[in-house]
Length: 241
Image (cartoon, rainbow, N blue to C red; front, side, top):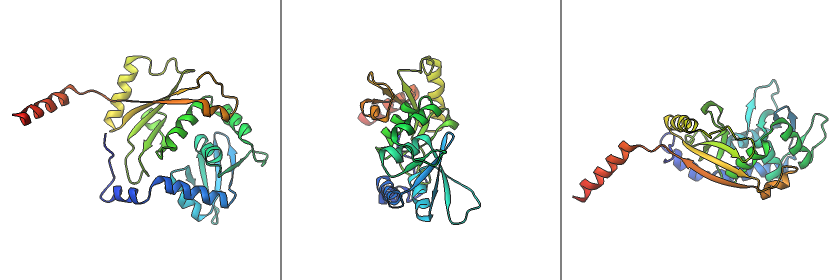
């Protein structure tokens, strides 16, 4: 399925301002300001200046929160987003409720406690983010994430992402009817179903260092249309004549 750009000039704008460059600018800005976020239940809160507000928005990390403060803008980051900035990009510190900065292991254990499948979801999230795909929550489509080629203001999401692992997915998409319903839903909203199978390769999830030993298998599933195939065949036959 080809990318569906939003309006004329959207593709040119995306090419002129690649997501990798935007994320790099955000990384530099957060490092220079020694940014520190706060854990808040199943999310992370980050107060930023005007420049970083723009970069976070352009890079599609978190969502702004309306507050009475005029000099600062607060952003609410998801667990995967916050850990990506902290652990993978090394540009964000995260403090607990005691205002002490947590190290990578303590932060990992906290997020595992808040989200049982956090190791699998984070591996899948970072796998696509490192390829410069923009990921947003996919709850409204019944999936884990939706993946965009660039900023959602420029292009529609192309993939509906489901994260699977060897553990804890015994009842998920194991029946043909589940596959059928999911694929039909993805087709109705012009998205391709992308399944990411996270394999721990026999390693546990004691610390984030285990992520290096995990592997991710990508599998796209689309609905086969017999009518379209017959039309294509007739067209090719007519062209041959």
